[in-house]
Amino acid sequence: QVQLVESGGGLVQPGGSLRLSCAVSGSIYRISAMGWYRQAPGKQRELVATITSGGSTVYVDSVKGRFTISRDNAKNTVHLQMNSLKPEDTAVYFCKAVAATRIGMFDRDYWGQGTQVTVSP
Image (cartoon, rainbow, N blue to C red; front, side, top):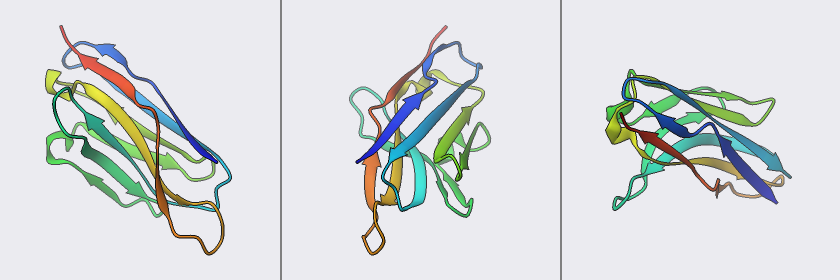
């Protein structure tokens, strides 16, 4: 069984910073990609940033230059450094891992429970 546990959310003022972390545990053979998604009230979940095992990254345009995704392959962790936060960044942030639990198995998506990020004066 694969578990993802996020941490680091909270309340911050506009212009502030937060660092989210996600630890993946369980029986894992391979993690192909990891990423962060967010869902604001009344909106669909959207991609924020992803990173492959080789370190290639993708960001949604609205966070480019402000957010940085990184991962530690040895520890099966992924981080999201969020700077210059704006009220529109307020959302529940979810961690996702694309992983296989055994040799020969296809990758599938695993999700964390989410962590609230609120940007408000």
